[in-house]
Length: 308
Length: 245
Image (cartoon, rainbow over all chains, first blue to last red; front, side):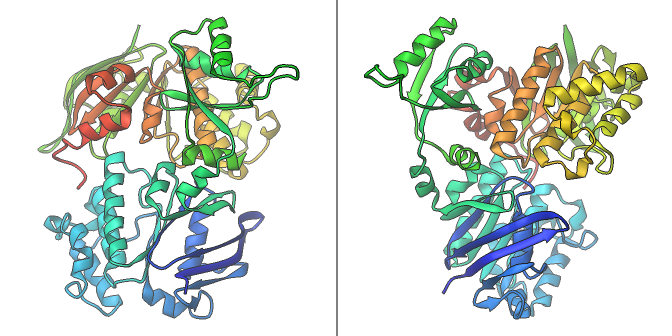
């Protein structure tokens, strides 16, 4: 049985097509990432799967239950951490957790092992009002509250947005621990570099999935030839590269530029367009310290190719 | 010419030292990356530099004006854009620019011409009459940047301007930043994307209210024996003792 099975879900807001018919399945125990920019439809999808919003058409089954007919069953079994902090600001840390536990007819003690690693970090502040916590502590409290009833499936909507790289890494370490407890995790993120921490991902853009697969398979299927290029003047290099007819796309990636290359030369010439040809071209444009290497694509390269 | 001069700038909230004696300078036309973990003190420092919060001690000059004595002059000579783009959703594209032009006291006869130039630069002349709420996110972000620099400020502060936008739009946005810097506008930018730190001329990293590193990305990588900015950030931010846990 699939943990989640979605078939042709569509949802409009007036004239805006937020979801244009998405279908996918999530296997029990996997971390499934929904990866794409703001406005792609991630939150709409999460709200439909957590039975907080009705789709216009299509079906969705969560842990064997239909999101429309069996919504009450689903609400008992899933944990949901919305993108916006939604706990009770005027209650203390401990009071928030107690409320969530009692709503789900359990106690903090009963499932303490699940939240222990996370909750211990905020326990020293358990008498502080939730509204007075720092961003990182709020995030940990929200995750604890979403976990306290031992959900079968955990829905995390952009848990790391606006979070610095170090705290993001710590958060993903917590998710890996929860996976070991057998919890299925659906997580959305706009950060492409988090794709590799998921078992499988769906790349989403403008209400449609561009691709669903493991990060490794997506990267392996990248069809273009990709080079990394550097020189002494990176800003001018970007413009110069774009003028060359064999360079199809050129974008900045940190301290290097990634270019996709068409290696065909005009008829009559035997060899293919290579490093030497590009280097000659750049030297002619008076670049120095030129470095060109062939590289494997990352998820961000793939997203840009698929979105094109 | 220096556009920012901060000297022993400090901000305390009660016992808590949010910004701890920071000193640095930013040159005209420079793209300056202001990094740090959540809670390191970036926002507090930025609020002082924008004339919104008075330093507890130390001093600062921004765009030639003293942040404590002449905060209104500072505000008139800077641009600011946050992740929550401050655009009016129910106004048309040109109306947003018109409004900001008026607020910053640009003479009416110049405004129309400037609106035309700004939209041409973004390549969205055809969207002049579109309500901002129906623009795609990537365009909104570029429009927000255009409004932030509409009055030709000496410096523009960008607070996580690219959070959540798609990879292509993120890169196009950085090309706008380069163009602004080429025109002599100083850019002061915070980001959680470490690849974007590489696009800055110089980068500072704040830890527990102090600036722990400040140099060009190239020199920082040498200094910390790191392959990329991400490694440097992790090395430094892991040292934090206060903050966000």
